Image 1 (cartoon, rainbow, N blue to C red):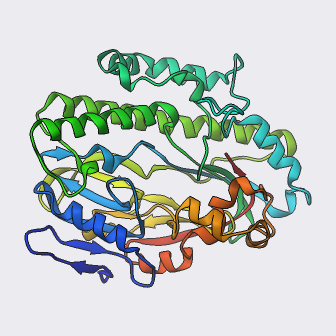
Image 2 (cartoon, rainbow, N blue to C red):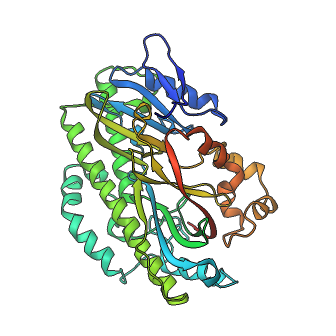
Length: 408
């Protein structure tokens, strides 16, 4: 039996909060968000906070929220279905070229990423009329359901949605080539449901807020607006979220296929079917916990049932981990989704210089310009401390260190 390592807090009239945060910082604003969540009457059992927990919109990033009879759209967020995918290849470190700049450039040319120069919705160099066959096939397979959602809720429709299938995005989304503890080469990437998930999330968050105002329901934070189970908007939102989660999973699979195809054009022949993991960390699902079927929202958290494989990435210059879940019931079978930020993007740009970033990412073929200072390793918690705090939630299967990192 694994010893539970959580810190518990219980306020009068509120659900308990159980936090796996020993040895890692938690800002006061994040604690207040957790306490706000704990006041809601439909919280099931308790609120769980992972070691990467930090301030988010409405609900903290790094929280696991089980609810019975209601769902909070802002707790899912707008990057619906965001998650990780990793594939182990048969390549070894000595089969990589000394100069990895060519590999990074080839991946950047293959997978659309970032934004257009005019700040539009499409990725820089987006597919145009030359979509990969997998992107077209998958889009047409799920398009009818999306059209049904958007026809009923026109403001939930994003522009040029099909052009986002198989694209990376911006911010903390990335593609990496990594080496594990045995010198084997992995490909790992992080992305979600792109513009369509953002529009779905934004629209339904506002609809929930409108309902709260209409029914004079006062909340400790307006972003905790919810839909009660049985309402039409509850059903519509759950359906839209599940569609966006499916889009996100397919999006990662398409990008992974394109990256592997690109690597095959530049590296010795290899296979890529030994270990593959594809997991969400911003999503909602129906699960059974503590004797009840409930909606479990993981906002910046990964499902870690006993035996589940998951991915916990560090920052641009830190190690990442392939993990196996221990099935800890108190965490709702969950673990962290990464290192977690210790400061905002704005603060990171103020605190760190390009020299700091170059030093922190030494040995990694990646961008070294001021456009990624908000993603510099110092803006994140110590991944080793994060892993130590959740040793009762997961075991480490592989330790990865990136040698190439592509950022949006």
